[in-house]
Length: 122
Figure 1 (spheres, rainbow, N blue to C red):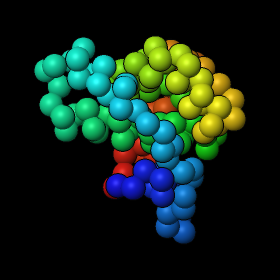
Figure 2 (tube, rainbow, N blue to C red):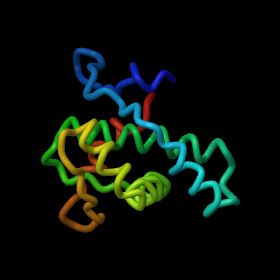
Figure 3 (cartoon, one colour):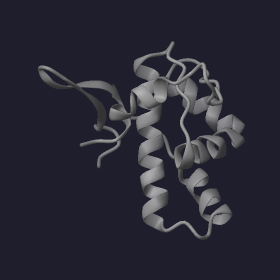
Figure 4 (cartoon, rainbow, N blue to C red):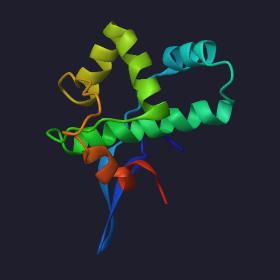
């Protein structure tokens, strides 16, 4: 998938429509760290987690005020990205125009589950 032109699509009665372009920033350092910290993860799992993380960010950009909180592998990629604070800040500024804060999943932010169709392509 070409990251620069790929987008998350939302299913509607009229078909699908682009919600937001996927971020195209370089996550190679983040993925290298994940490979080191999770040597049991096959490469396919790492690449899928990266793709889903990019989709999560596109969902967050599409609805700035939704309290989205990923789980599992997507959250692992996000936590690892945040550890590289300067890169994360610069990536947020370039993609969102603001800093995307991490909101832990709890009873008040179930939007991510509600919008899961935006995260996984058909």
